Length: 369
Image (cartoon, rainbow, N blue to C red; front, side, top):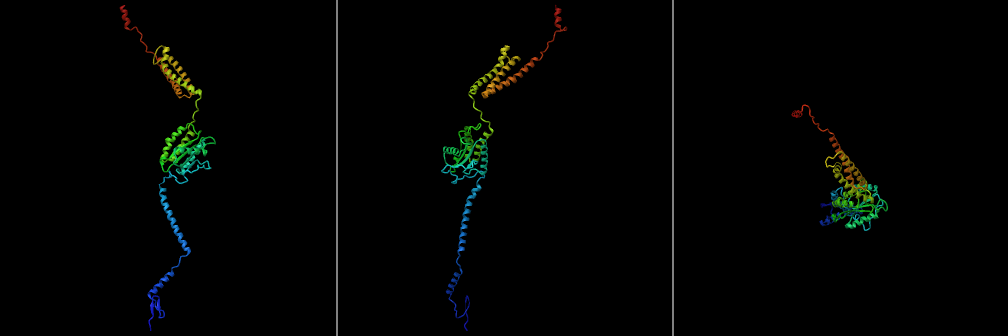
């Protein structure tokens, strides 16, 4: 009886002989291939979505890695300059916002939100005092003359003034040049009727611009420069007394006469102290008589009062000060001197001893006689 044949699949009979080794390898390969199922459309879309998500995540991570260091190094009170196209000067002239309550236009983003709010409050206070002012920042490489022309045009076309036709507004323009920060500048455009603001005139404001505001802009302190310029105008408008009116023609002529009168008064006060006693008492003395000093004090004081009235009417400081000094001299110092002399002369002189009977001189004389 023949023994059954064995193969890798189990017991085989004689009717089913064992396949050769190469046939078995081919069959096993075909079976593995038949076991791998093709991917469905749902699985393919899921794989594509997964790859897209990975790509987007990688891009976001790279962007955050580039942006985060700059955000960490940025100072909270000094924002970076906005160099995007929206900050650049447009080919057409900018149009003012319909909300006229906005007076700070920081196009370059050189101010923080808190700094803008503080400047808005200061400009609102100026508006309450009848002075309309506006702040504008821009990026440009224009020359000083071109920037001044832009500021003047901005003030005119945006109607920066208290009322229509007043022409009394102020525009603070900061021009930033990222390529050359040393050329950053600040300019002021004022109307024909802006100055004087109390005792602040155009020349004084220009000195403040050149000496205080421009150096701060060169150092990058844009907020400090603007605050200084706005608050200086605010202080003059709110706390400084108004500029006095100009002199009339008769005051101008009287001023010259009060100068001559004041100079004569000072000379008379010095010479008259010796001249009056010399004419009256026929003697020169450092301590004249009481009567001579009284006449001198009355004459000098009366002339000082007249000089003071003329000086005040002509608004002459020299004449007013001279008259005040002579009045103090004649009305206070000379009376004290008169009182001293009166007290001295009222004191009794020392008495002389009279000759008595005990005096030996007469006795000697009588004996000789």
